[in-house]
Length: 87
Image 1 (spheres, helix red, strand yellow):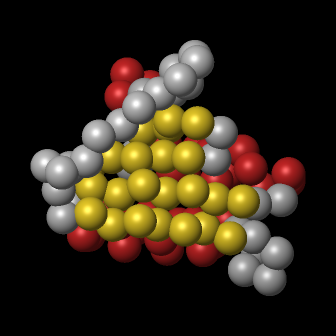
Image 2 (cartoon, one colour; image 1 turned 90 degrees about the horizontal axis):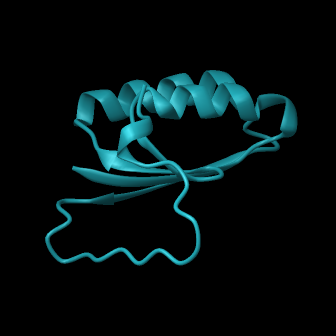
C-alpha cells in the first residue's frame, strides 16, 4: 500500500521521529513522509513511533492508499527529500 505520514511532535522528539520514519518511508518535506510499505512494516513503524512520541502532546497522521494509480503529485519550489534519501 502507499502511505503519506505527517507528524507534529515536540522539538525534543523530532530527531527520533525523523530517524524512525526514514527507516520505512521517503522523506518529502519537514515532518512529511511517503512511500510504499507492507502492512507488517506499517505496524512496526506505528509501534516504533508510539515509543518515540508523547501521545498527550504530539500527533501522527497516516493516509493510506491502495495504490498511486489515480494520484498525481505537484511540487513547487525546491524539492526536499525524496526516494534517494531513504536509509
